[in-house]
Image 1 (spheres, rainbow, N blue to C red):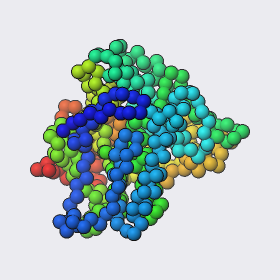
Image 2 (cartoon, rainbow, N blue to C red):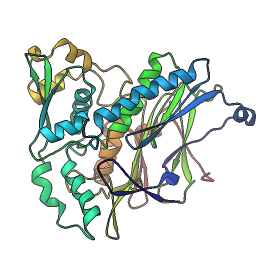
Image 3 (cartoon, one colour):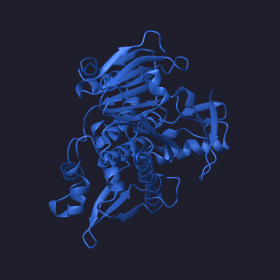
Image 4 (cartoon, one colour):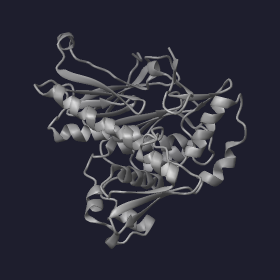
Amino acid sequence: MRFQIEYNHMRKIRFLFYFSLILIFILSFTSSCERKESKFSEKDIFVMDTLVSIKIPKRKDSLKTLTEVEKEIITYEKIFDRYDPESIISKINKAGAITIAGNNEVFLLLLISSKISSSVNKYFSITLLPVLKFYEEAGKKYEYLPYDPEELKLKTLNAQVNFSTNPENKGIIISITPGSGIDLGGIAKGYIVDGAYNELMSKNILTGLINAVGDIRVWGGENKKTGYWVVGIQNPVKPQGTYEYIVKLKDGSITTSGDYERFIYVGEKEFHHIINPFTLLPSNQAHSVTIILEENIFLTSDLTEFLKNEYNWTDEMLFPEIKENILLNPGQLLTTEADALATAIMCMPKKQAREFCNKNNINAIIYEHDYKVFISDSLKNNPNIKLEKNEDGK
């Protein structure tokens, strides 16, 4: 079943969600007695229009722990949501430039986004806000697109987020190219999942699952005998409940981007939400991309060298709180990177997407537009991830 949700904050535009056709569905292979008395505590949290479900082992303080995690990740809405006029992202979009503290998470996420964009040949972009607004406005006012979105290329093609420092207060000045704007829709969900994961790990939660409607982080293994969490991958062009592949993973992130998730209607025509940064049209190379990461591909250490090479920073600009903020721990941003990679690969031409995944050892499943399924070499040969064809599809 599909249904429409009309958002309340600042926009009156209808998005079509296929909540019943969520690409990734957690499959539980526990025994019947385990189902009667669950060994896990669970909590659902709604943040930035996304349902985040968390599952951790039951213990005396598990409900308290989940409540504390909820408070932590809800703060992201006040930071990243471009529809909230008080969020830092909204303030950047309105003013064009603001100064924030060196340890602010906005700086980290924007810098990560820039790093990933550079790593994927610009197929990932957070500066497409004018294009997204164009489609949103068209959906509200018109029966057809009022003009070719290619006309917006002057605002977006070379748009970027810039970083400099303020020596007086040791803050960071974040600015954007005039006429552009920031939207974090292609990476924020992954960052929220990682935020919840890092908070739980700090509380010594050594087993768990976090699912933000297709952005998943698992660790510790649900099944004590095998040590795996089991995740079903649905074929996006087949009926609901058709799980064509089964992934067994002990520790890592599984993230999917797809052209079925949400739409903007302009008249009778629907436009899905993943925009190709070069054509400014919805991507049309794949129906879905699933990325499975056990370790980071491009976000492997601190971002000091990237700041120096890309933004001409000097050692004098790297104040202690900035250095600490951009020092990345292993696995800290696993889902964040997987989220952005899935978005980028959705926009790449088919051949380029395949070559990119194989060259960079990215575990990927791509349902291409010609109905072929591409499985990357690294995933086929990965001894730690078990990928099985689910013959009955259930």
